[in-house]
Length: 232
Image 1 (cartoon, rainbow, N blue to C red):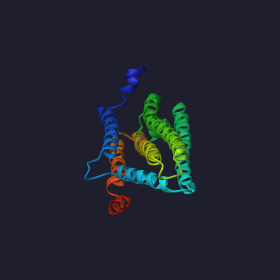
Image 2: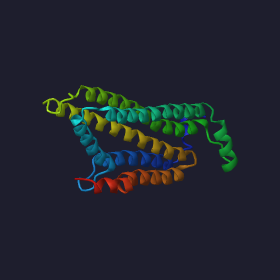
Image 3: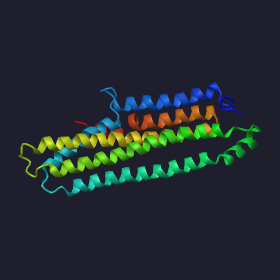
């Protein structure tokens, strides 16, 4: 059985469902990072708080508190990057031995699915996990850049270089957070992509659920309400 015949086991609905997941992932990412000014996302609201943090940091003589916060942020990125490595390894191992999936599917549907189909579907999951890993690693590195710039801010708040350097650190902090959030979104969609193993309908349903969860966290969550109440 050649590759064309094997891929023929995928229906047009399969390709449509996979395309929908990709489209929702990209569209949500754009809307979250570029929301309407009257309806900011949590990501954008927190970006302003991060800039305010750096302005306040420039006024403090003792910055141990600031360094501890940044260290905890870097630990978060390291944790998720490590988690993604384990998840990627697990999925790749399953791609190398799809017999368990084939056996379960055959018992349920009485139809033998070629191994390459399972590998393709699992590869879709790996795509999102790898994307998340790269985002987390880059976020960790940019948080490191931010730490160096924070250390370079003069202790004298009246120094003309203090505020500009603090704001540079703030922008790096914002960029690191944006990449961290993108990594989290990719992890959400990796979970949704797993439902393709069940079938295209399950993938469509999973896309809707994951899309709603991601959107609601950014535009309809209690933390967003709290941030808006405290907005200047």
